[in-house]
Amino acid sequence: MNILILCTGNSARSILLETLLNTHGAGRLRAYSAGSQPAGKVHPQSLVLLTEKGHDASTARSKSWDEFSAEGAPEMDIVITVCASAAGETCPIWPGIPIRAHWGVDDPAAAAEPDWDNAFRTAYDRLDCRAKAFLALPVETMDRDTLSAELARIGDLP
Image 1 (spheres, rainbow, N blue to C red):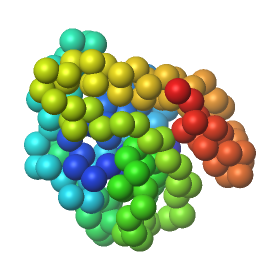
Image 2 (image 1 turned 30 degrees about the horizontal axis):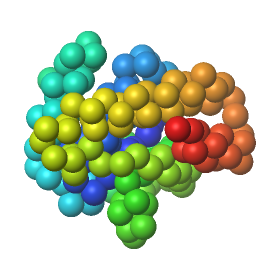
Image 3 (image 1 turned 180 degrees about the horizontal axis):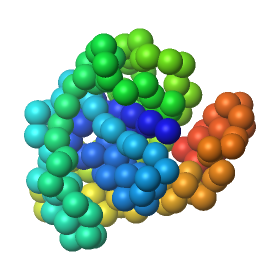
């Protein structure tokens, strides 16, 4: 199963969720992240927090969603937006017919630098809760409508 996580800048929330799903999903799925207007670099506080939490952030990079609509790109089963801006944008046509879901989280990168630690931890904790709720499901055997409903429910978790 391939999952694409979208955000506008692809520097914080989408990077966090990509890492969480790949770490916790260990072989069950492959998560990717991208942005409609990528920042071109991962937010330094994302890297600090991921490293502190024991994740390998060495391959994290900010990239355009165009990479995933190009010929030869992996076919996505699910596309999850984590910011309202990306959720409202007209996305490229993805190969296949991925299920779409929105798991909105406040942008920690928008916080003032003295508040980064708290803002990034809050975003991480919310995304971690949602990633674990998703991975607790028997996603490999769920039908499309049930999976879509569960993704929506998970997006409403605090």
